[in-house]
Image (cartoon, rainbow, N blue to C red; front, side, top):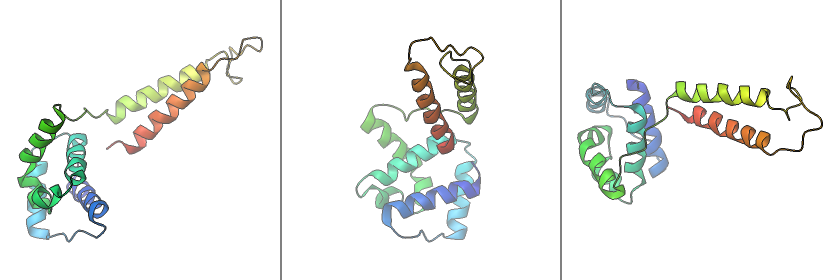
Length: 149
C-alpha cells in the first residue's frame, strides 16, 4: 500500500462515516502515515480494520478521528476487533490468486459440454445448471478482483 493510497482510503472511510470531507493535517497525518506504512502490514488487513473502526457507534471519535490518532491507536483497534469477534480478520485473497481462479473458471466454462462455443459441445446432452453455476462463480470472482486492494 502506498502512502497516497492509505491516505485516500482513510479519507474515503471518514467521508462515508461522517458525510463530510476529512481535513488532512499535512505534517502530522503525513508523518503518521509514513511511520505506519513502514510496519509493512498487509494492505487488506489495514483496510479491514479501518472499516471496522469506522463501523462502530462512537468508536471513530475515540480512536480514528484523524490519521495520526488511527495510527497511534492501531494496536488497540486491532485488539478490540479480535476481542469482539474472537477471531482475526479474514485473510484477504491476493489479486494473483483471484486472477488464477478466473483463468481456471474461464477454461472450465470454455470446455464445458453445454457451452455452444466449446469444441466439446454436445447438442444431445441434458440441460445442466453446472454451466450457469460456473458463470455465476466467475462473475463473483471478477467482482472480488475489482474490489481487491
